[in-house]
Image (cartoon, rainbow, N blue to C red; front, side, top):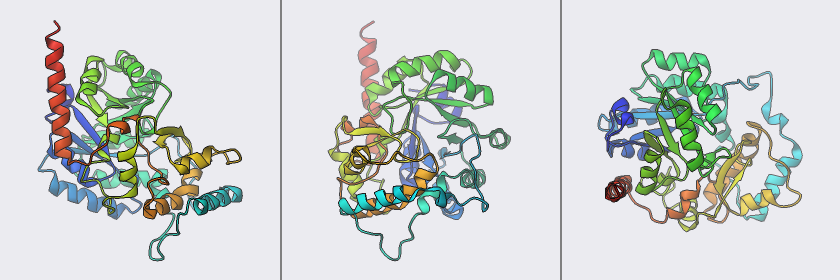
Length: 367
């Protein structure tokens, strides 16, 4: 199936796949979708540059995009403010006590701790844009809404469209008014940062609000061909999928058969929770002993972004290394209940498209 999204980006299928893995992103593009690499894990701009060079060489000439985390309002950053000093000692004590109770060991001595926060800072997100625009990217997406006007202008001057996530129709209107080219209507079911409105309700509201001015993608709870068909029926020109690729065989980030992937495979659609403990903003996470500890009586309230990132950054690294599926920190959507097998991206995409075609054929027979 080809929609206006396919024509706009020169892709075969109206499927955009977000992932923090360049190997998964490249495989999505090679399979005919638009792979979008999440940049937030790249603390060093040179590391991102290397990843994008790898994608340039491994996408078979197919288009790909990048996703940054950049608030429109610039938070206090710089040498004059020590953000780490703003984290209350009692919060640090709680995190360390919880990790001890969960049996999470310290990081290996050779591994540097705490750098995971850097990608969430506004200044680092700008460096991600700088690097990305040196490559033949087809899209810049911003996970935190409309990027600042100067970033929009730079992308447009380079001929690169900009996408932004929206959790309400009003958010979508503001994005398009600001110059955003593609709106991602992300429902409550989604993993990571998400709002209060379910996809089935949100998507037609956003399409009615801005669909005549910008392509609208559906996100949140999408992982099957039937759900892609439903999104198209509600007016989307394509879908934005993130969680569904976390159990792709190409997804390892250096840790094959990781505890996190094993935890995802065992989870049901009820095993997620929406919380501010990951970044300081509401995000849907896999429900584990870590999330339960933060929900227990006496636990401190999460800090605002980026202080919460600073607080839990090393904890996330330690849990990822601990090899305990019951104690991990992982954003994932409610579609996790269907993510019960590790398969290559090409196989995941093929199954998705086959079910989409079967669904459309079945619906056509109803006429």
